Length: 200
Image (cartoon, rainbow, N blue to C red):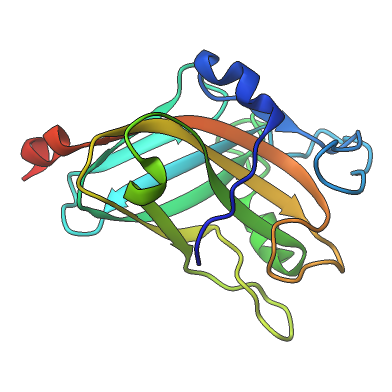
């Protein structure tokens, strides 16, 4: 699946690092629809875990509300990626902290989307690609995006990766447009040929 290009209003804050916003109690100006009232049980952060499938030592993690969050990937590499949705109002060891199981349980209503929102140098579009690897639990399964594969090209790149969780109850059609955005995050992403030497 080739990625869609979406210009996000949050790009104005790109140099401040990663931004996460919960859209559960107000209309999203980009997506149609409104969420319900916040209950305190909503995700407040997105965590991305990148694992190089050919080198177990090559791992990087981002947490969307941790300030200057960034991800550095090796060039010419393939990664297994796990997306976690966390409620940081809850105690980390409690059942309510990791909300990813709730997203998976109601996966017929959700879709995770990625976009290379901006490029500072290099050609991010040509050197960063991805595909969703998991399916939802609907009668006619469609992609979910909690588990993904990313692969990188040979060139040095610095840009922004946008991650969004789309709530699409009775609207899901495999596209990112229907419904509204529950939470979104921006991470600075680097593709580094020098990282290859570090881990190979």
